[in-house]
Length: 269
Image (cartoon, rainbow, N blue to C red; front, side, top):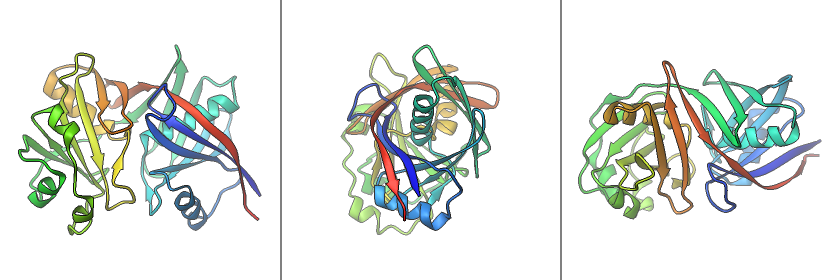
């Protein structure tokens, strides 16, 4: 069996920036163990498996190198780019996810628009050893998002956020059930409202270059703080990436783009 594949840089218009994802356009349903093995072989933070259901409708599942995850923004963006390339007549795609409901993606005006459901955060206490090991000296606010099982920590300065140099080997020794930690700050850049970085050494990778799925709660968090429904977000990782977000009644729309790096095929005998 051959499976068509893409490697795509998401949340960018430049190669070698944004976040890499592998996209597998599968002709039949694959076992979870096989999808997990393929994701581990690719080694990216996420690999998406996409199967056609009907015209413009596709099933999608997301795997890190070690586990299935409920939702991944950059892998959804990458999958959309692959499908719009495969089917030029399509302008709207509906993804049926296993764990996060249906996602609608639209291509227009040279950008890809994704809509994700909103998820709440709640104030929380946390193991301060985590923030210390990340290199954070002062936490302005702490929240927990149950859907993603993530801790959100707000810092005072986006410059300090960009300069963080976590001790990942020590982080991995901390006993936690968290999937990851999202660290954020109001942006000092004129073109952006807030910045963030996402660390998840317990789930398969140390840091995600650009993360879209977290906007399902991060965008709402900053919308409430800044009193704006449309905001611009910048991920100040080493690869960097950006997106515009718009808060609606029960969802968040994410506007960005992606670049195809390569396409090919898996040969599974």
